[in-house]
Structure formats: structure tokens, C-alpha cells
Image (tube, rainbow, N blue to C red):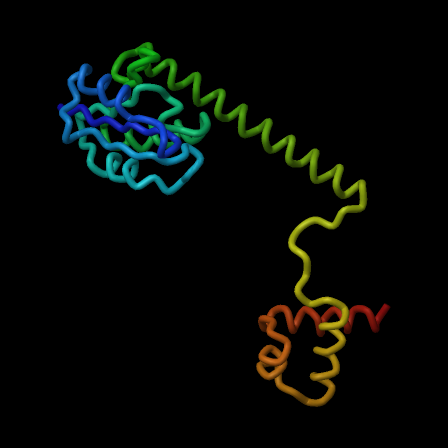
Length: 191
């Protein structure tokens, strides 16, 4: 059984020393401490990926605090599920949390419930925001590349007998956008 630690601070100016000392005190060998200076919001954390790849069945993955590892309850659960699938226990030093114990597993299950709740609330807020924006007459989504002027140019080029590929090249749009512009013209002329 190996203790594998992950330590992180958000910025270059912060020090990893306090976390490193706690890991050494907890019995983690220096060569099994994976560290980096990156924001927790950053999804590309090479040291974390390396640590998760390194751990093996029977190992314990250790962090000083939950917020050093995950940016949300759902992110934490995802990481812990990955560890569990490998047969790796998870331990948080400052919050006395260890999935190798029944209390730690119960805490993990409660976190799962909170993560699900957090996701549902976020989704509900998003849907409310979309409904309000629509009610206020705001157009949602990306602005179309084929403006009315570009659509007119596409129709003109097509009426001159140009092939779709040639039109794509001249207006700088994809095949789908060109066809959509031509279809919009057909739908508008049938109304």
C-alpha cells in the first residue's frame, strides 16, 4: 500500500511548502508527492493526471483539503469514482475524511447527493435564464455567419450556375451553411 499525494496552489506566488510538510508528516514518500501551481478551475492539470495514472489497487490517494483537488462536488465525485474503480482509497488530511472507513464512505454518499442537487439547481437556473432572455426578445446562440447580405450573394452565385463548392470558396462558408442559406431562400419565397 502506497500513499500518493496531490498538492496544489492557485498561483505562482503561493507556496506548496505547508501542504508538502503535512504530506511528509502523514508518511507520504517525497517521490509520491505530485504538485503543481495551477488554478483549480483549470481542467488541464498535468500533475493531477499523472498522480491518478500512477495510483494502483490498494494505494491511498491523499490531499490536504478537498478544495485542493476539486472545483465542485460533482468534480470531486468524478475523481473519487475514478479512484474507487481502481481500488484506491481517498483521504483528506485537514477534514479527517477517508473512504477506507465506513464514515468516510457515508460522507462520500452524502457528497454525491449534494452534487446531484447542485447540478439540478444549476440546470434550473440556466433554464430560467434562457426563458427570461427569450421573453426579453434576445437571440440566443451564436450569430449566424450567413447574414442577409451573404445569403443574397449565395443566391446570386447559385443563379449564375456556380457549384456549391465554388460558392463555399467565394463566401468562406461551409457546405451546410451554403445549403442552409439556399433553403432559407426557398422557405421565404414559398411564404
